[in-house]
Amino acid sequence: MAVEQNKELVRNFCQTILVDRQLDQVAQFMRDPLNDVNETGKPEPLAHVTQYFDDYFQAFPDLKATIEDVTGENDLVTCRLTLSGTQQGEFMGHAASWKPFSVSSIQIFRVADGKIVERWEWVDRLGLRTQLGIQN
Amino acid sequence: MGELQERNKARVRDYIENVINNHIVDRFAEYVPDDGIDYSAPPGIPRGNAGTKMFFTMFFEGSSDAKNTIHEMVAEGDKVSIISSISGTHDGNLMGLPATGKHFSALLLETVRMVDGKYAERWGGMDIVGLMIQLGALPDPDLKARTEAYTRMVERYIYGVNHDDENALREVFAKDFNDHNNAQVSGLPPGVEAVVAAHHQLNESFEGLTFTIDEVLVEGDEVAIRVHANGKHTGAFYGFPPTGKDITWTAHRILRVKDGMFVEAWNEFDQVGILQQMGVIPSFAPPPNPEANKALVRRLYQAENDHNIDIVYELMSPDFVMHGDALNPYQKGLEPIKQGAKMTQDAFPDMIVEIEDMVASGDKVMVRLRWTGTMAKPFMGMPASNKKMSWTAIATNRIENGKIVERWFNSDVFGMLQQFGIIPGGQS
Image (cartoon, rainbow over all chains, first blue to last red; front, top):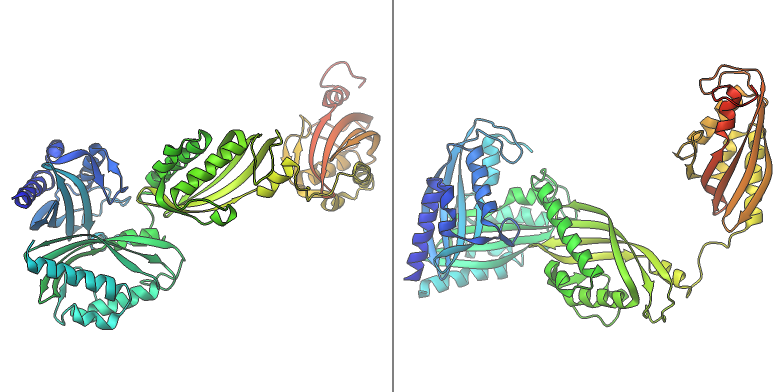
């Protein structure tokens, strides 16, 4: 069933890219360009999307992504994650705080022809900032 | 999809569109049970519908027109995930932020577990950090990238106008674009097609139409631009037949961006200036009066002889601009004029300036001057010579609304330096 295949694709994506950080594998899972709705609402070169993931890994070298739940319907797949780690590099213009955090994230993907073509993301940035002690 | 999933999605849609969007917080208990868990609730918010009610009551106080728009729903098992955005105007106290009048649109991703048509558990939520950035409460880490992106859009827009390229305009203006100044031009279609039609018309009216971007400012979701345009009036404009005149005008425009497109804009441009240049309506400025301008220039130099320096405030504009020479370089405002006159008077207490000739036309007066005086104190680094010295100058003064606003100036600095003995050839 297509929904199950789509979910499998997203599960593999989350495992390979977000958990195992094999950034050279991004093109295996995502179409270039990708419709990255959060950023510009327009198709983005995959290199930009990869850079976005890499920025997170640079700021949080010990980032741990745990897949909590995956659901799907039609061409959409949702993935709920827990992200935890320590801020060891610059994040959103704020220097390393060396503080630990654990926050929730929801990522939603649209799949077409076996590839992710669209991406929505919510990260509990408010919780993240609070735990890292970022005031402004 | 199964019946349960369809029922759950219908419940979510009913809750968001009929209850939340109508701000009926008293009906929240029909959709969120007393013991519902919201894993992203801010600290201090109670559990269940009481917490939801508390949060939205606060939110609606900060935005009286807040509206939640559903983009997608994903249902599987007993879960429904919703992609939506909350948009509105920040017209009240929102989470401690006093009203800014700003428009916001915050993404909301949530997953809910439905039990008996109610939100038993909820994960995810609104991008509150993104919202606070939009309202200016937090610094914007993406400002540089967004400024660049919006500037590219403005450049594409102006390219489209200058090249009468409809597709360039359709690339950056949303289909349902709302031009708040369309009332000024009748018979335009709605949306982006109005932009296309209006600029096509402008290209028909002005041959070689060229807009130049003079300023681009980006804040939040708005980009504000200042431009000037020029073109030859070779087609009808506002019903006035072509005059063949070269016309130039200025304009300001503030555009709001959503999802990478201009969605609305406000516009002011110098229509009356265009019509005045075309000669179809008279200029508001009084006609030039060369005799009055000469009298003004005469009063200015007489006052210099009377050591009444403060008269500059009466006869010259505070925005006065001097395009000078080696003796009097480029200056703005009146303070440098006062300083220069005072320095000269200190060094040459008996200094007299005489007007030897005046030629006046339009708004300008050219005046030929001669200064004569005894150098009693050091001047511009030169030791006092106690000799009588003299030098000449010719200046163009431009007069606007009875005040000198601009001056071009050449003086015999060479002759002055010869008298100081710095350059050979003078009688020192």
